[in-house]
Length: 404
Image (tube, rainbow, N blue to C red; front, side, top):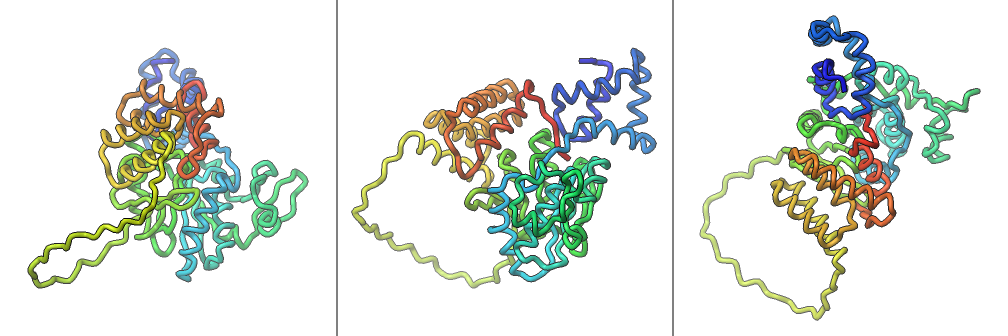
C-alpha cells in the first residue's frame, strides 16, 4: 500500500461508492504513483485537478479501473422467469408502453435480455429499455448490441433465432433492429444526482440493478435505493440480485415474494378514507375455536431454522430493528448451522454495523459450507451458486470488482 496516494484512492472510492478491494487499490496505485512520485504537492494538485471540471475525463478513466464489465445474456434465468411471469406480464395487460431501466448495464447484455423479455410478454411496441453505466467505453460497445457466442450461451435457442441475426465471421450476432431501436443509453454514475428519467412518463415501471450494490458501502447502497424509489412509478418494481437483499427497511418499498425470486415494489398512495360519524364500539364476540382433529407436523431443527430464517426476512422487509434481525439470524443458525444464506446475511448485517472482523468470519464460514457442498439448499431466497460467488467477492483474498 502506498500511503502517498491515499487521498486519491479515497476520491475514487467516494465517487464509485465502493470499498476498494486489494486488487482495485493495486491497479489504481500502479496508475497514480508514477504521476505523483514522492512529492505530496503533486498529490494535492492532482486531487484538485480531478475534482475540477477540467479533470472530469481523467477521473472517469480512474473510475473505469475499478469496474469490470463481464456478464452474459439471461444471467440468473430463474429470477428472469419470475420477473417475466410475475411483473412484466401483469404490466403488459395494462396495454400501455412500459419503461424499464438497466442501471449498471455494462456492455448491454442485460438491456438485450430485457428487450427480449418484453417482446415475449407481448409488451406495447413503444416500450423502451434505458441502459446506464459510468463507463463510456462500455456504453459504446453496448449500443452495438452485438455479442459473442460465449456471452449468448444462456439464450434459449428459439429466442436466439427469433431475435438475433446470423453470426458473422467471428461468431458474433446482433440484436434485430426492431428491438435494438427500443433501447437508449446514457452515461451515469449512481453516485451522482439527478438520476435519469423515463421518456415521456419520467418514472420507470421496472428498475433492474443486479450485482452492483453488493460492492457499495452501506451508506452508498441505501442512498442509491432511495433514489431508485424516486424514479419508480407507484406500483413500480425494483429488481436486485439474490445476493443484494435489503436488510434495512427503505421507505416506500415492500417485498414481493414469488416462486424463485423476490422483488421490491413501490407503494401506491392510498386515498384518505371519508370521514365517518362516531359510533359506539361494540365488543368483539369471543372467537370460536374449531377442533379439526389434525395432527401437528413436527419439523426437524433444520426445517425450524429455515422457517425462522424466512421470518427474519419478513422482519427486515417490514422495518425490524437490527438487534431483532441479528438475534433471529443467530437463532436460525443455531437450529440450522448449515444454512449458508443466513450466515451470508448475518455477515452483511455485521459489515453494515462496522463489525468487519465478525462479518469476515461469517462470510468465510458460509464460503466453507458452499465450497464443501454441505450447505443447506435455500430454494426461495438465495441460489447457492450465486451465493458462492457473492461470498468470494466479500473475502479480500478472492478480490472484488464492480460492474457499472
